Amino acid sequence: AVDEPDPRILVSSLCGLAMHSVGSHAAAVDKCVNFVTGQLKDPGTNDPLVAAYALMFLVETAPPLENQAALANCLRVIREGQTETGSWLPGVTSEEEVGEVCDVQGTFATNQILLALGVAERNGLVGDNEPIEKAVGYLKSQAKLRIAADLDRRTKAGLSAGTAAAMLALNMDRADQVVTRLSKEAFRLAESIPHSRELAVPHTLAAAIISRQSGVGAWIDHHRHAKLLVSQLQEADGSFEPVPNANQDRWEVPFDSDPWRTAHYCLVVQLQDPVLAAFSAEKSHPMLVARDAAGKKQASNSGGPRGGQMVGGLQLDLDGLDPTSMSPEELREKLMEKLKEQGMDVDGASIQIMSSSDSPPDGQ
Image (tube, rainbow, N blue to C red):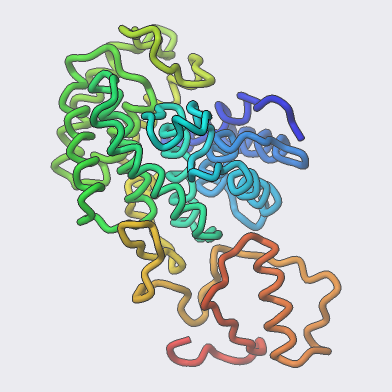
């Protein structure tokens, strides 16, 4: 395993997303894709936050068939890196404090990873739902602890924005009381942007995402404020200076650098374009499921593949399988095993076996 996370994977993924959102840097984006996929070859990374940014970048910019191994590696690292409490990369690790202390670092990482899983699902990459349910439970408990925590209000609001954005990206119930309250806290952050130079960069992007998800009116108002902040912070060479931190004891964002900040602020401004529609919860896929307030998949969900549709461009390695020598039942069983090996949640799934000359039955 890799001992230390490679910040180049994370920063390259974020910068690649930013250039992709602009739409005029295809060659540079391709270089980022080649670098990230090359770095993710076994053993790749063992850091779930790095894997999450790589996952978001690759599903948004590259054909899944060409990067199947890299995507599977990202999902594996995310799945294996989750703690028993449902969080990722917690800053609070003692058994006495877990679940009782507001964990800024763990909340930030868990927000980002859930957002990545939501973006991946909206691009057709569906995995196990259990990590999502555990993470939603953790984030809701942290939302309660954050109310009384000794944190500045902008950090509280920024973490709330990140949590709400992740939950909405996962197609959770917008009427849920926690989601509604988190969204209101996020809007307080958006309103403070023109008057603040103490905002952590990811909190600013989280506020942009939640505003974009909340409709045209909220986005126009937020975007006007965000452009003002960006113009104040940008240097002559196009990069962005660090935002002054009034509380030096506050947890610092990992991998902070000029490219990291520049990519974030580029995304803040570019979110009004439909290129990164998954961030605004607009992009969807036939496999996108509705979730209840606990993150559980709703049994009544009408989503799912329709006849003749390809699910996420999934390509299975069929080495050792000869479909012509198997009965339909045997082939279904083997295909289900292959799907499980890919980390897919196949509970309640069915496979329709057809020849190339068949047309899909109605309703299947």
